[in-house]
Amino acid sequence: MSDAPIAIIGAGPAGLIAAEILSAAGKRVVVYERMPNVARKFLMAGRGGLNLTHSEDFERFIGRYGEAAPRLRPILEAFTPSDLMTWANGLGVETFIGSSGRVFPKAMKASPLLRAWLTRLADQGVEIKTRATWLGWSEDGALCFNQNGDARTLKPVATILALGGASWPRLGADGSWSTILAAHGVEMAPFRPSNVGFNVAWSEHLRSRFAGQPLKTIAVRLGDHEARGEAMITSYGLEGGAIYALSAQLRDRVPVQISIDLRPALTQRDIAEKLAHAKPGDTLSSTLRKSLGLTPLAISLLHEGGAPPREPSALAARIKALPITLTASRGIERAISTAGGVSWSAVDENLQLRAVPNTYVAGEMLDWEAPTGGYLLQACFATGVHAARAILRR
Image (cartoon, rainbow, N blue to C red):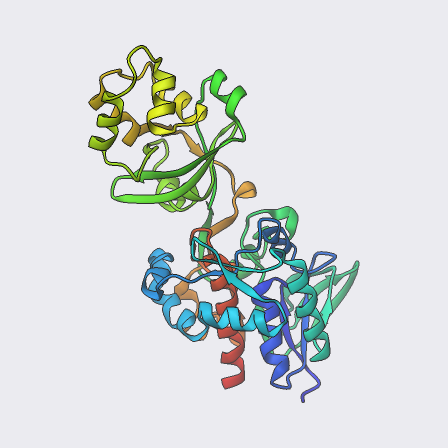
């Protein structure tokens, strides 16, 4: 074992899984993290149940990564959702597949998994240094850090950068590293918010009465793109899984009009027939509630663009394609993830930087995006595994 360690900068899922693989192979590994503790965004994700990955068919799975799918395919084939589940089970964290196909730990928390993981890393000799901010490279190629106010340098055997994207900066990932890499000739793509909410000019009635309430079992459509699931009404507009799934398409087109299908399981004809057989004398709200089970929120939405038509066919058409105008996306600081970062052309097939040899990139630093549902964590883990294995092959 060489005296010089392998340095990993960033203690999120990509960095920690790389540290595990390298240390398991007998390599000396030091992980540097600028925050006071590790995996803050991972722990935040665990507040919603820690959706580790997804169990759907792999071809459908890989398609979730859009333009980056061809580059990510071999990486995800080498560390699949099944591999991630096996890894978690090996830590004593049993997983299960939910009704949606999403994969969660049975405890529905990130903290038990992280504790077991850190114990394994400590047993394998991994050293983790917190409050250590990476500043770049010195003239002789050494890594430079500010650690607890003191200047430190290190010349490692190899380096893996796993510094995250630019969303939720208070959790540690602010994208400030992009300036350092760009100065060293690394091609960068601009950061853009992904899995983000959008502004809508709601009426004061809808905003004051329904902000914080969900629209369940809906379909959101933009042209040929469709996402099913749930959306949340907020004081500023819309967010939630069905919106996040289309954020890549919506983000670059705002202001843009989407349509919401309030009853995707029914055809327009089915809905029209139910409305036509409504009890005479019932109010419109009563008819929509009794005939279709629409919630007060859904009924109020039908009134946002003006009084809805009463004729059954016209009303059914509106229920199947309720127009909503999104005026702008929310900022990166409130996005769940980001697109942009290190361009794929800036790395080779091993995720090694072409401009900075012996330095690898993993996780959300790379220019890819995917919807929520386990796809984000899966790719972070898989790219960390890929970079670590590339170092071991070398």
